[in-house]
Length: 82
Image (tube, rainbow, N blue to C red):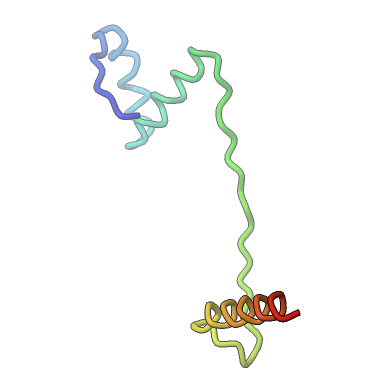
């Protein structure tokens, strides 16, 4: 959600030093402070490992959709003929 708010001077005087320390991450600082004030636990980031795997020799990555369609057609023929 995107919104504009007016921050009172006394709040701004406490907020500005935190924003200066955050080096451009004001959105995160403000969201963290709001979560704390509202009693919301911070969302946990899940790291998912990424593995680089190659295709076996002879498999053309540009024709995988073609293979999928051929298998679907073969399955349909088998179902309707048999």
